[in-house]
Length: 399
Image (cartoon, rainbow, N blue to C red):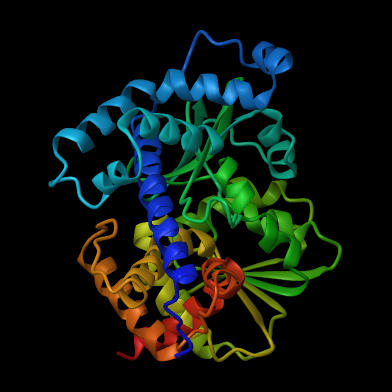
């Protein structure tokens, strides 16, 4: 392995560890409040942005929404220092007052204001309407809404060298927004929200020729790619007959290019065993609900599709899997193999820990060249990390 342990490399890894801990604390606070449906009120979002700018507005909103929670979190790091390791190590780098400001700044960087038009002007929203409530078996089709100032998770999707460990972005609308949802037994299973639109933008752009997508949902991806002139056909693999039935009755008739769409009731894993390489030009997988249920499915499916050479395959929220699960494992690898220090990264359950440990072993087997700071950042970037993840998927499935 081309792995150098000089002072430059060691200082880079130490700085990355500090960034990792800071971002982990900030993201935990941010996602916790989003899960609790935090919203801010009594702020003139549009007026303040017009007078002072979006960055100033973001700092005001962050302080209003998260200020008290950040102070409580830092107090816990101070008074429960041993119990809160490794995050309390941040106090080795800075005083509590500075840490409060750094966490607040980190959160402020990751929140943004959105106009309802960012959703309502989307082609799907302009042409597809959900009226009332429709049901088929355990599945229901209806609408939900976001209040002005209610925090939502948005799509990260960009690697930044000055912010390498960010796992989430967030935002809020300055007006009320209604959006379609699918419910399974009364619980939200899938919805077309801002993060959905953002996370599918690149897979929509890349699609051309004969397209196949695994997973139907509300048909957002199907709508967007079938509307492209350079897309000849869209084949959908969906195993839930109730989802298919609701889609055919309530949504597909509103699609302007519905003649391009073919729906096959089948399991995605079963279908790819029969699928011929090159039968489709572009393939997009989207049959998991989110990060945690999706990780195992992603690894299995990426392994199953690894043999396709003439069909380009992409996977929904693959970059989020990199942010949440694989890049932290790289950080642990760097700490162990360069600083020779055992560390604990964010605990996300036994299955994730097992996968991360296997990925670290895989990195040692791959022997990435790490002889300078630039090469370390290159390993953390999606351009290098995602191909490694896809290669690891086959390695992991055969362990």
